[in-house]
Length: 245
Image (cartoon, rainbow, N blue to C red; front, side, top):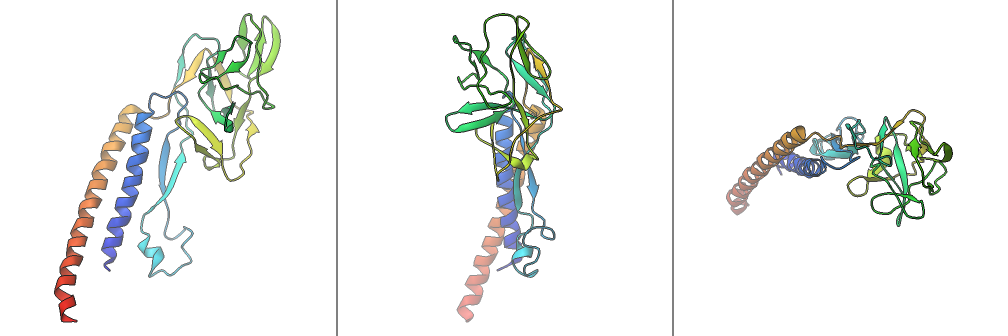
C-alpha cells in the first residue's frame, strides 16, 4: 500500500485530535482556573519506536500526535471583592476533597458553610497543607499571600497550595479539576503567592483559541480530502491490476 496513504491518514488523525483539543480549550476560555491543553508530536527519530525498522513502522508513523499536555502558564487575575475568592499567582493548585478522592484546582471561588467549613462552589471541602478540611469562624477574614487565614486577628488555618514535578504529572478531570498520574506526589508550593478577593481566569485567549480551532478544522478537512484521493487511486489500481493476476 502507498506510504502516501499512511501519511494522509496520520495527518488526518493528528488534526482530528488537535481539533478536539482546540474545541475544548475555546469552550473553557471563560472557566476560572482552566488550563489549556497543547498538542505535541512524537518524533520518529527520538520517539519510542526509533530503534525499530526504519523502513516499516517508524517511518510510517510520520507525525502522529504524541498526545496533549497542560499549559501551566498564568491566567489573568480578576478582582471580585469577595474575601473568600482566592487566586494563585505562580505555580500551584488548591487541594479539594471530592467524592472520588483529593483533586486539584486553580479555581478559588470558595464559600463558607453555616458551620464554618470552607468549600468550593460544589460544596467540596477545601484542604489545608496537611490535607485537612478548613474551618473558619465568623468575623473579619484576612488571607495572606502565604495562605494563612486570620479571623479578627486570630489564625484559623492555612490554605494548601501544591505543586507537581511537571505538566505531565497531572491530567484533567472535567473542566478545571486535575488528578495526579504515574504516581506523582504533590509538594507544598514555596513560590506561589495568593491574592485574596480575586479569581484567576483561563489561560486560553478567546481570539487565539478561535484561530486555532479554524486552522485545525481546515487542516483536518484537507487531510480527509487527501485520504479520499489516495483511496480512489488504490481502488483504480486494484480494478486495473487484479484482473491481470
